[in-house]
Amino acid sequence: MIPDPEVERAKQEVAAREALRVFPDLSPDDLRQIARATAQQAYGKPDREWGQIMRQSWALEDAADLREAEPQGTVTGRE
Image (cartoon, rainbow, N blue to C red; front, side, top):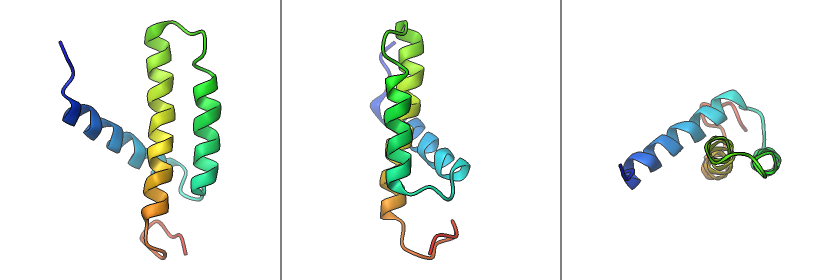
C-alpha cells in the first residue's frame, strides 16, 4: 500500500509537536544538533530500523522549524 502524503505529513507534524513537548527548553539549534546525531545512528541499520530512526530525526528538524516560527512569549514559556 502506498502511503498517503497528507497522512504522512500529519503524522510528522504530530511527532514534531511531541518533540517540542518533550524538549520545551531546547533552542532550534539544539534540536537540530540532536536531529543530526540521531540521523548518524541510522547509518548501516536495516531498512526498517533506519526508517524509524530517520523519522525521529526528521521530527526533530521539524520541531526546530516550529520553534523558530513561535512568537516570543507563547504558552511554551519561551520569552
